[in-house]
Length: 77
Image (cartoon, rainbow, N blue to C red):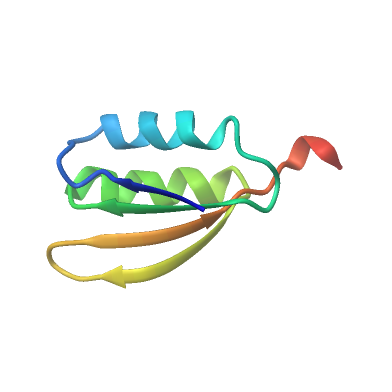
């Protein structure tokens, strides 16, 4: 599992960093991320779900969104 704290960054940096982190990962590997920026809290989960990855919300409150992403490699099947 890879962990990335993205709470210090504002949109679109967290989305770019998530894309870069997912690229070398294998199917089924997990990425745990923390987001605080309102734009990123909206855009990152939307993007991940649209790409077909499994997104589990671990925490969602006023200050923080914590997600566990399981990579799904759709190109393999």
